[in-house]
Image (cartoon, rainbow, N blue to C red):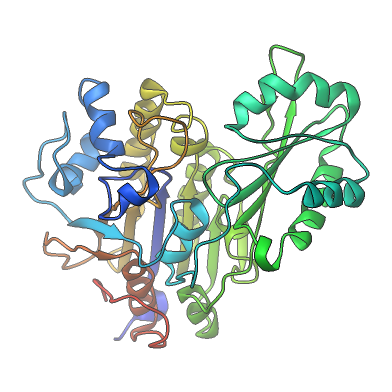
Length: 388
């Protein structure tokens, strides 16, 4: 296809904004989940005029978001493999399907692993529980601050998280400790992510800092990102995306908060002449989804809605913009973990025709490759392009 060298593509992941339970959701204890549907009901209707005009309410019934009169390409996407976390969700968007479920530890980590973490880091470990991060810090934060200890915890996802008070364990030391633990967690213990969670403040008012860092297991197969780089298309990552694809990103840009990630994405749309921008907007998951904060979740979506208007104004005639998600985090579901759901798809590009497209998450990466290179990637990487 002519003119692809000057094209741009942007994929924005609205973290945890699922749109209905997958057929196997019951196997995960997630039957009947619907993050955006239930959020809309609990909020008394969502107010998202730009996303509504693009066709968000054409994907599924949403209180306050009627179907669009002239939608862009829209639909629901599903994973080809197992899992319901950021690692597998983002991987699948770029055509990486884990050959087997990543290990989880609902009863905590084995004592020998905990002992090895203490040996590697030279710090005592406390916790070793399944918990949401805020509860772990509230309950164990003072002990961690007083004793210079590491709070180790996990969830239903394939993660090992380590929280430490910055006054007792400097953040660079915590990052180094998590890098060492990442090396430890290999083979049968190769969790999807080891996550550093520094926090600060006095007892009763602990707060996470913006220095979270994810140490992700290497993807088990080639991705659409690797195809882009092999064809000399620059790949820009905003937020935690760079940490989910080690070795597959050309330039990483700030995005620890939604405001920062939105600003980075807006700047890149104003500066880049060509290439791919892959953005994660984390707060609908990390800040509001796990806390079941309906009002905060809605406010974050409204911020994204406003940002989408700005991005549309910056698009050039030959640009592709995709809005999607990686999993769910249903505010009405028991517990605080992610939920196994479809992801929404809204795709803006010339000639999109307003049609519906339901398919694998990998179709996003396949579309980016075709849009930016004019041809498909290797057959070994799944996904069928809906644009290009």
